Length: 114
Length: 112
Image (tube, rainbow over all chains, first blue to last red; front, side):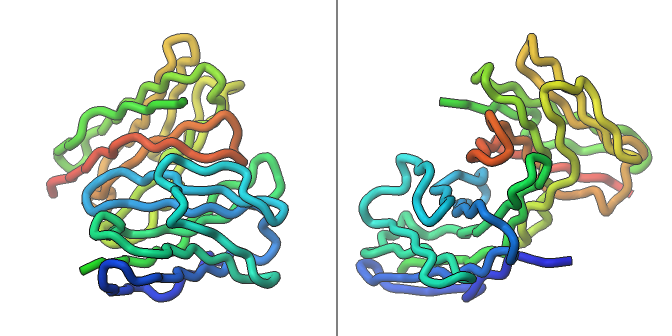
């Protein structure tokens, strides 16, 4: 079964540094998302991306965050200047075009900001 | 915007018993309600979903019911097994292509 893949699985960075989290969505999917989950809390929506542009973003997704689909396969989340509170598990997800197509999550990247 | 409340936060049952997790939502435009199971350190995995044109859906030991008038939906797991132990999240969305708003999760423990 095809999967959403994310790299790295764990990223440690210092406060103020830039990080890029990488995702390869399932190949024929058209809708892409980033969610985050602070340890022990619920999954929170960050941003959705369709047709090469952001379709919706949450209040968490401020000017420090950006997404990009640099080629036909990768989907990246960049945090420009990380803060301690950015420490979380970041999940990429993708969905096919069919109405009944479910959302598929990747295994996540655990970001630790020190 | 949409807000999803989920109860209980923790649930402990004896193996073989049933478990019920309940969620309420606020946005009457929501019409897609998936349930995800998340094992420790792993990704959320879809276990069942329901759309607003259906009141109930069943898949083996798992069932979901939806009451659109009352804006609540529930997950029912029968004949629970230790491997059902995990955190379960409900979610709601106006459309399956849109963002999902998740509940706060229920930690289910099935005691052998």
